Amino acid sequence: MAHWLIKSEPFKWSWDQQVAAGAKGTHWDGVRNHLAKLNMMKMKLGDTVFFYHSNEGLEIVGIVEVIREAYPDPTANPGEPWVWVDFAAAKPLPRPVSLKEIKATPALAKMSLITSMRLSVQPVLDEEWALITKMSGL
Image (cartoon, rainbow, N blue to C red; front, top):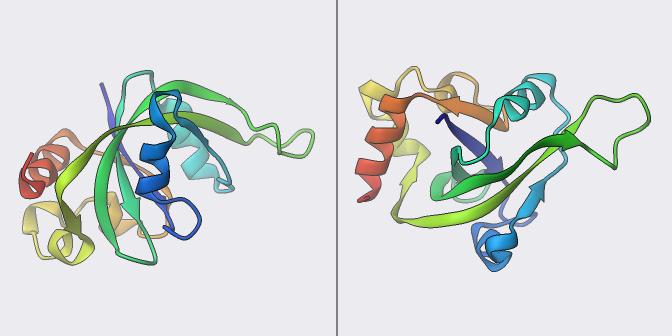
């Protein structure tokens, strides 16, 4: 099982909205970056994903699970290669982990959240996942 991080601006789609979507989950849309798309195409059913509030908050607030693997984005123009992935909220973090904390943790210095800050869909290494969940109180 792989781990990932997805970013959302809370005023567009928040953790609370993701939780309210329930077990049926929601599709992740609006991705128009090829590297982010490739990451989405690598996601497998059951993969776990950090839900990160970007712009406002700048913190990892919860964990979602992949409930449907990549499929064609029905809003894309014909011939465009964009995809959606469906996620359902799995659990909130007991304590959100801020970008400031992550940057201050030497063991996380090479995390994509630090090295590829603008990328909206990122891989998370097992050791990064373990450390951040520990920092959150899980």
